[in-house]
Amino acid sequence: MGVTGTGATVWLTGLPSAGKTTIAQALAGRLRGDGHRVEVLDGDEIREFLSAGLGFGREDRHTNVQRIGFVAELLASNGVKVLVPVIAPYADSREAVRKRHEARGTTYLEVHVATPVEVCSVRDVKGLYAKQAAGEISGLTGVDDPYEAPELPDLRIETQDHTVEDSAALLTALLVERGLA
Image (cartoon, helix red, strand yellow):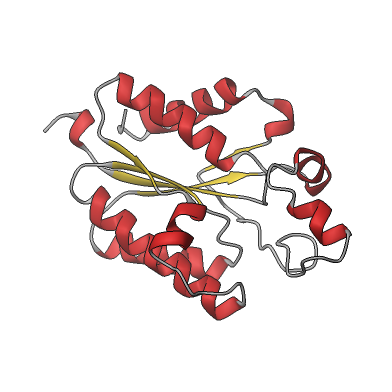
């Protein structure tokens, strides 16, 4: 089984509107074009189908991340490149996912999409920052709820300094460096 059949989980963590899903979709297109099997486990879709009923408190967020990590590892261990653009705000939740992968011999890469909150709030793709500012919602990650940035990610992308294609190229280079693309 060549490189195209080698699975891995690439977890893109960062604040809301940081660019996680946009970068994951761009990378997925590149990888599919090179013959890789790829799945994108988008946080919003997972919440609708796999984690319906969970809230946004710490315990529910941890449960959500563990469910996503389980599915990601299952796919990755079967030769799929799994791109996971999910906030996963707590370091211990991400570490538990990493350990699950390591215990099964499955590659796990953590990518910090390190877009400053000021940039994210201007992008405000889903209108969350505006709703939080208007007092309509609370518990927004990075504003009035914690976000624990990775201390030693495999890659840190500051999207305010890179185009989407440049960001996807940085991720592709990481995969090549690790023998995965």
